[in-house]
Image 1 (cartoon, helix red, strand yellow):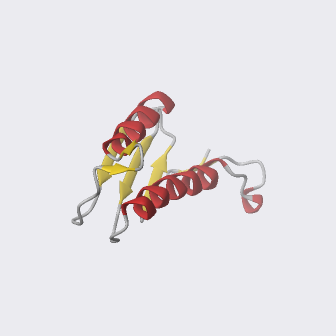
Image 2 (cartoon, helix red, strand yellow; image 1 turned 90 degrees about the horizontal axis):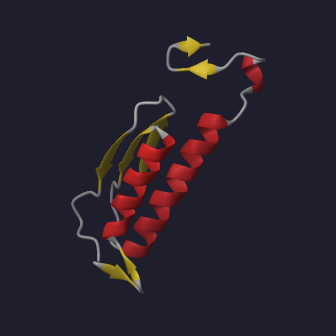
Length: 95
Protein backbone atom coordinates (compact mmCIF):
# COMPACT_ATOMS: atom_id res chain seq x y z
CA UNK A 1 0.00 0.00 0.00
CA UNK A 2 1.31 3.41 -0.93
CA UNK A 3 -0.26 6.68 0.13
CA UNK A 4 1.21 10.12 -0.39
CA UNK A 5 -0.37 13.51 -0.04
CA UNK A 6 0.41 17.17 -0.39
CA UNK A 7 -1.57 19.79 1.51
CA UNK A 8 -1.30 22.15 -1.41
CA UNK A 9 -4.65 23.79 -2.00
CA UNK A 10 -4.67 22.01 -5.39
CA UNK A 11 -7.10 19.10 -4.98
CA UNK A 12 -6.52 15.96 -7.00
CA UNK A 13 -6.79 12.20 -6.56
CA UNK A 14 -4.81 9.42 -8.17
CA UNK A 15 -6.28 6.07 -7.10
CA UNK A 16 -4.80 2.83 -8.42
CA UNK A 17 -6.60 -0.24 -7.06
CA UNK A 18 -4.00 -2.58 -8.58
CA UNK A 19 -4.49 -5.60 -10.78
CA UNK A 20 -6.37 -7.88 -8.36
CA UNK A 21 -10.13 -7.57 -8.52
CA UNK A 22 -11.90 -6.11 -5.51
CA UNK A 23 -15.03 -7.84 -4.23
CA UNK A 24 -18.01 -5.61 -5.08
CA UNK A 25 -19.31 -5.70 -1.50
CA UNK A 26 -17.74 -6.20 1.92
CA UNK A 27 -20.72 -6.98 4.11
CA UNK A 28 -22.97 -3.98 3.46
CA UNK A 29 -20.12 -1.77 2.18
CA UNK A 30 -19.91 -1.10 -1.56
CA UNK A 31 -16.17 -1.15 -2.32
CA UNK A 32 -16.61 1.37 -5.15
CA UNK A 33 -17.33 3.92 -2.41
CA UNK A 34 -13.67 3.77 -1.37
CA UNK A 35 -12.53 5.73 -4.41
CA UNK A 36 -15.53 8.06 -4.18
CA UNK A 37 -14.77 8.83 -0.53
CA UNK A 38 -11.09 9.47 -1.28
CA UNK A 39 -12.02 11.81 -4.14
CA UNK A 40 -14.49 13.76 -1.98
CA UNK A 41 -11.97 13.91 0.87
CA UNK A 42 -9.15 15.15 -1.38
CA UNK A 43 -11.26 17.78 -3.10
CA UNK A 44 -12.92 19.13 0.05
CA UNK A 45 -9.66 19.13 2.02
CA UNK A 46 -7.91 20.66 -1.00
CA UNK A 47 -5.09 18.13 -0.94
CA UNK A 48 -3.37 16.15 -3.65
CA UNK A 49 -3.70 12.47 -2.75
CA UNK A 50 -2.10 9.42 -4.36
CA UNK A 51 -3.15 5.92 -3.28
CA UNK A 52 -1.92 2.67 -4.82
CA UNK A 53 -2.78 -0.86 -3.74
CA UNK A 54 0.34 -2.91 -4.49
CA UNK A 55 -0.98 -6.41 -3.86
CA UNK A 56 -3.41 -8.47 -1.83
CA UNK A 57 -6.34 -10.82 -2.25
CA UNK A 58 -8.62 -10.03 0.68
CA UNK A 59 -10.79 -7.03 -0.19
CA UNK A 60 -11.52 -6.22 3.45
CA UNK A 61 -7.81 -6.02 4.26
CA UNK A 62 -7.06 -3.95 1.16
CA UNK A 63 -9.75 -1.35 1.93
CA UNK A 64 -8.68 -1.23 5.58
CA UNK A 65 -5.06 -0.71 4.51
CA UNK A 66 -6.09 2.15 2.19
CA UNK A 67 -7.66 4.10 5.05
CA UNK A 68 -4.82 3.35 7.46
CA UNK A 69 -2.18 4.42 4.92
CA UNK A 70 -4.02 7.68 4.17
CA UNK A 71 -4.39 8.36 7.91
CA UNK A 72 -0.67 7.73 8.45
CA UNK A 73 0.30 10.00 5.55
CA UNK A 74 -1.99 12.74 6.87
CA UNK A 75 -0.61 12.44 10.41
CA UNK A 76 2.93 12.64 9.07
CA UNK A 77 2.09 15.65 6.88
CA UNK A 78 0.62 17.71 9.71
CA UNK A 79 2.95 16.54 12.47
CA UNK A 80 5.59 18.81 13.96
CA UNK A 81 9.15 17.83 13.14
CA UNK A 82 11.23 18.83 16.16
CA UNK A 83 14.37 18.96 13.98
CA UNK A 84 12.94 21.96 12.09
CA UNK A 85 12.17 24.11 15.13
CA UNK A 86 9.48 26.65 14.21
CA UNK A 87 9.98 26.25 10.44
CA UNK A 88 7.11 24.82 8.40
CA UNK A 89 8.17 21.88 6.20
CA UNK A 90 7.41 22.10 2.50
CA UNK A 91 8.23 20.23 -0.69
CA UNK A 92 10.22 23.38 -1.49
CA UNK A 93 12.29 23.01 1.69
CA UNK A 94 10.92 25.01 4.60
CA UNK A 95 8.63 28.04 4.71
